[in-house]
Length: 113
Image (cartoon, rainbow, N blue to C red; front, side):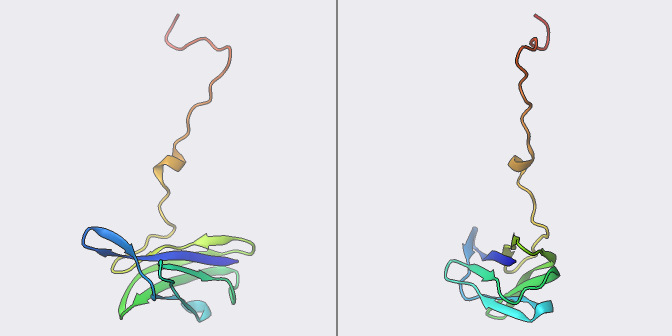
């Protein structure tokens, strides 16, 4: 069981990583700090269930994800953004949902000959 993610914030028009942010899984009393690239990892002390993951940096709170599922043998990615809300579960990228039709060999072309 592992919870990983990246902490970001908006500076001007850019989204930048935040190093040194405190990330908490409050229901389990776990806290870690993001590295210089904004990445964090929880692997010890996790118990299967659904939990709240939140971030704080220089007194600025934001990016709480609720009902994050922690499952034995799985890694869950929880990106968090300071100064805003974090959707959970994260939105699915459109390109992962689009499916191309399968071609069928020997089938006549559609629309007539």
